Length: 340
Image (cartoon, rainbow, N blue to C red; front, side, top):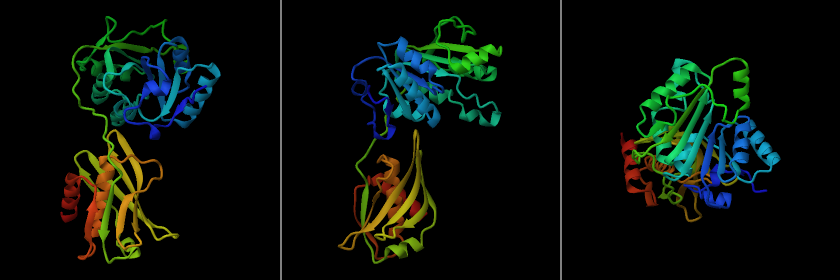
């Protein structure tokens, strides 16, 4: 049997799905597969397709792998990540054949509606990744969320309903989830949205993020590493949609190396990474990305390295940056931030 659990941190952007499945076939995605019954049945009944389940819940991931293994299917895979990250970074434009979303969290409180998966941006992203004619299938038993979904789909010019109405309340042909069976047994009304991607062009608003070379900056400075560490304060840097927080600095007891904990938010990716500051035997300071956790060398990481470097350079007039592979634009943004 192939390895059914994929490591999102190790997959290229976009992912080579034909290599992963060992064949070229339509890609069917279930977002938030929960108990995995629908996912397993989808893989069993659609052997001609490559079936992918995505979840963030660790118990659901373990359950899904176990059930796929027990079913003996070879066309199913599981990925632990969020839907936005999967579609934007791992799926090429116009590649996905079907997206299934079964009973997503309705976030019923009004102040939490911003957390709902189905919104304007998600539908734009789904439109950019689905093939023309590709299916978008959503099911919910929450009446308010059903009205929300219907409103957002009605405002999405890239989709049309495959039925005469925005949704139907009976669908005897679909595969039933365990949650769905419980809802129906309790008399709750389920709403089934059967929509499809039409021919309206979708804007290229969700490019696959760019991975850059591993960043590094070299400085000459009379400051010792303990002197640098003693002056550290948490700080932030912003460049467009990239938000960086330098949270805390630690010092290694082994080689005196400094490690800065950084949080980087650049949609759709959020990373908590380590930035390392070490001294070469020749005396220069080198600032780079620590490899713990398989961080992605994105523009956000570049900005974090640039911001940390500019801060260290500001601590002493004799400290100078002598080498850097950070793009000039991000260097300038970090410098402007440090001078403000």
